[in-house]
Image: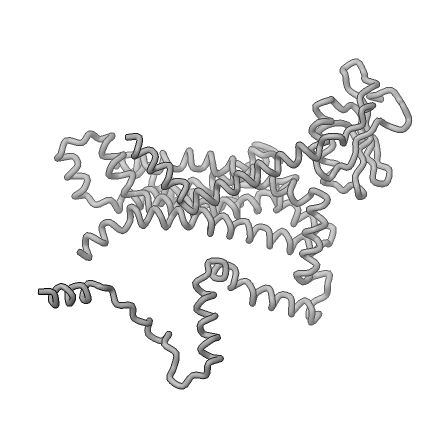
Length: 122
Length: 300
């Protein structure tokens, strides 16, 4: 029985289709790992220092290019858009989980506290 | 005796004969022979067989673009599309939209297979159910997926549910028809033999009907996925707020033709890769494992 199982597993690994699928899965895992690695150090330590009653805060999201509709829509999932300034998008009412999710987007360069220290959530 | 053995061995040894028409002609120059060898070597490579046919297509596309037959606002060449690809990758737009499209497809295919396969077997195996469902099946097979979009938008709004509904609808009916065709292909004498040997209905299903229907089911899965992929793009164009179909339609709105070309190329490449790397080998392996038994027996 054990030999049968081994031979089945052995045949599965030898199958070109299974091997291709495994390579595909490995590539997806590698991409996810890369997203996690590149997310570290992107968020300024001062982000989230001034929070509102719900624990939300403002943040400036810096891109390497002027934001397009796609980027605005993606960022809207994590906070309210308070305007754009060149390559920077001003976000309000961002949750800590939202900052983590934004940091995983590789097209975001940095997440910093807003320049004018207005109270969050305004 | 020894001579006999040698003769038998000689007779048993397969003789490799050059296929007709491949033998170099007498008096052909060494250059021609060498070119022919290179060509034969190339045609044996999977990469060449898979990608080779695209070379003249891309060359023609490039040539037409370079000749300026059409204005650049209507027709762009491969370099512009490659440039757009790099730009959209850098901005994260293409991976984001692709992820959205593939997620929708995965949901649609998952639900489509979960509904289509069992329903197909039920319709195929129970005569009364089949008599009742067959006209309905043919009716809905004829109603195009796009025709559902207006009512689906009313029911579910511009949501993932609406897109998933359309994909599921597109996959279920061809899959069910393939399953019915597959079950019909199972030789009756095999069923009778299994039953007469005391096999239960469950055992007959799992050991005779299911394996016998697998080649047709594999073909149905492949066809259904192809229809689902097309339905996804159509649904994204009309319903979606993201995805490759949406990207193409949105690019048309702002007059960026290169994104439309890029979207078409991405859709084609993705489907071709999925089909060539997974679906076609899966179907081939299934047919080789289960589908050739009867014909080999007949040949024998």
